[in-house]
Length: 300
Ligand code: SF4
Image (cartoon, rainbow, N blue to C red; front, side, top):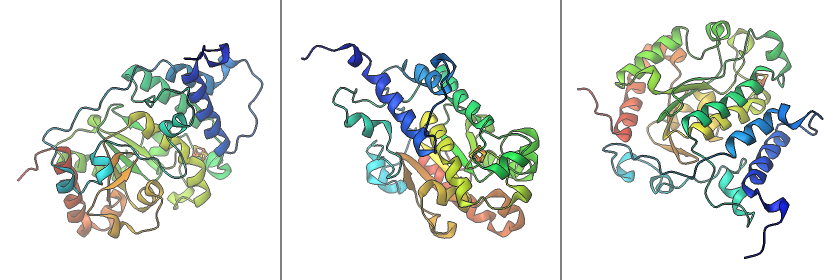
């Protein structure tokens, strides 16, 4: 085995640092400010992630039905986490570096996960990639919930109530989401809730493609840290953004999709359900499919 040189002594940190630099580059950052390394968020995050424990297997879902029965894609059912085309995960970058460890750096221990998410949160708070949204927001809405959740709900963007309180899904749509979660015999503190956009679009308009592209890296990094087994997309913006598709919600429902090894179910946004109560029965069908895959008994 060749002797390690000084520059090769910390290959894991090098790989993680390279990923973060590539992420910043994809976000349009061309040059880092010349400040002491201890002051830069990216170095703080690298420091946190570099202390990761070895990969530990995810606990199997209780009474989870076989992959074919749940509609789970074969690769995901086998426990693999295939990469997205546009954003290679840590494992694919590591595989190109013969000095890199083979195991991906996540999942993190709870304290490390919280610290790494706080690094992203601080980036979001000062983000001004979308000039109009940054100008008109009261505050950013990062996400909230159980950092070890098996299930994440991904919505579209903050509304007026969320913009005022800084938490996702706290208005009327949030109250309906609470009922949906309760119908699944779960509690809000069992799940993690986040949006595609972290800032409220004026007048609650649909997010623009540029805004979605600007904000994508934030929710992708949140999901990469939480690594939920299941993701429930609420509405077209969440589903089409996560799955990189233009297929309408009505055609995405009723089956599982894959996002980096997480099983994705698509249903209607609670705001749409408030306007169109007749569609609630379809969302209940989606939730029953989700509960069955999670091994949660379905109430009679
Ligand atoms: S929506 Fe996202 S990318 Fe745009 S300014 Fe807010 S935090 Fe930044």
